[in-house]
Image (cartoon, rainbow, N blue to C red; front, side, top):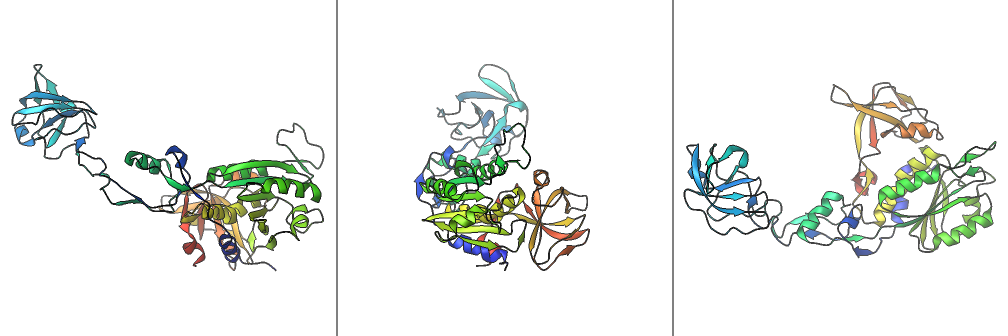
Length: 413
């Protein structure tokens, strides 16, 4: 009996432990998830400063340009003004330098002319505040800058660096992975014997895991022998926060993952009402969450996106677990299995009507990896629908966009 997709997603998330907190360098925080709120200790910037190279002036002195004003100071970035301005005086100033006392505007160097050594000709009138960055204009002291649960990008880490606050995040998950199957050979194999297949799944899984920020341990290809699989599994469990396999979870006589784990840990083998990716193994081996993904590569991808990616993000403490979805138009329509939630690989473009239009990016069988390579979204056809007419409306799950939906938004709990 097939189980609903959302029910299985909730069961997976409910099983995820939180990873430990660690303090990291700023660059090392990119891709990690903040475990504590971040409040600004000081104003940012901490002082008024120039937004452009030019001259600090008293705006009232520039009301009838051109005029020549006396240069009384030269303020470089990182320097401190030596005098305050009085009427008729200016200070040469560089971008980022503190504003001298008395000054209330910056005249860009492009609208000035050098005259004598100690004077400058102002060619345009300035208004109070022109090209001055106020203290606290970016962030005010004491304000909340970032909330716990934010997965950090480079800009977030840069803001924290500017405030001098070392990020405290959940550590990155250590994930052990392997492919299973006697038919598999390394991708570097120059020519294939009849029945052999180059293993593409480990390349796919490694890329998906590293994109998520995981520390990946690759245990290679495991042949269809229960004892061999159990030996590799024991090794993989040591120090791993999660284990992921591809293949061996369906109903065949050689599905060794299922055979090896049927009486071990809490791993269950499900038929999920989704396509591709119906067979899925999930549970714990020891204390380690285990994900048994199908063997077909597109099924690996879809199963990873719907189950493993959100689960690892939950372990990392993220608030947003699932990719963004937007409304779109499926130009070529589709006939799907109404008993399942179906994920179609599609490519998208925004049309002159202002809507996002999608077309299938290739064959939709679960082994057609090329269609996934050309896709930038999954068109989601919910269970109970079955047919989408050409030009019909669908949700598009944007597979190259960051996660944007919380557990509550997706599962309603």
